[in-house]
Amino acid sequence: MSRKRDFELVPTTDDLGYVLEHFAPRGRTAVVMTMGALHEGHATLVRTARAHVGKDGYVLVTVFVNPLQFGAGEDLDRYPRTLDADLKVAEEAGADAVFAPSADEVYPGGQPQVRITAGPMGELLEGASRPGHFDGMLTVVAKLLNLTRPDAAFFGQKDAQQLALIRRMVRDLNFPVEVVGVPTVREADGLALSSRNRYLSPAERRTALALSRALFAARDRLGAQQALRARAASLPASETRAEALSQIGEARAAADAHAVAQAGEGGGADAVRAAARAVLNEAAEAHPPLTLDYLALVDPADFTEVADDHDGEAILAVAARVGTTRLIDNLPLNFGAAQ
Image (spheres, helix red, strand yellow):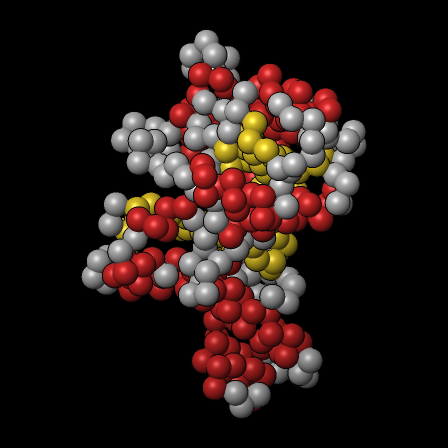
């Protein structure tokens, strides 16, 4: 290994140990874990990590397609492997090195017999659709945290359940690392950036846009409800909420008045779900159709469904298949605060 601080590819754990010992300044290291096929979303993670540790810090990107988190019939063999392009993206975004080990390097004795278990949260939503996925993900994240020894690790909020489980593992098992979530990066048409987007035909992509449209429709519905409540609260208390809203004279307020009156001060989660589902139901009739896996409005702490009268933070998560491509997306919402 060179002793220069030039950007470099690190292929083995021995090389990684050398790099960390000689080049990574203590207290100022960051890691961005990926499975390769890097795109602008990953580049954003790297740039955020660079800003976090500063120009004198050390940013390491890992590229490893982890076999433990692929179930039977999933796309392990199909998953894109574009290391040369990945190196360019990582370097241009500000990384100091890319750790890209082989499966034999990460699991020298074959698949590990001792693994991290995701627990109850890992059995919901993505965990229910992909049994064992989160156990495999947490196992490799734990191993990579031990190998890279960062002060901070950066993950995209697009994989919201994954991020929540990593934070829980770090807290429960006392990993000495800060976990930083970075907002989802979207393409110009709203589709969340994903390496799997490249599998979509033009027609499939048009259908897939329903995922982000559904999330935005739900966000708009929540914002409208909150605005209506605020307006109603400012009107004379002697009038009923629905009557007060109707008197505002706005078409949207009048149309939503009854629903808002029924929702109450802390409610409205069901109406938010319904707004998203309406978009997805329409996409189910498209050509090609969208096949919904789940739509869930959940508590960020444990990913259980929130009640209609929920107050506080929530995550609206969706997963669906278009053609042979499975896509996920989500949006954080805050009930009780302006969107």
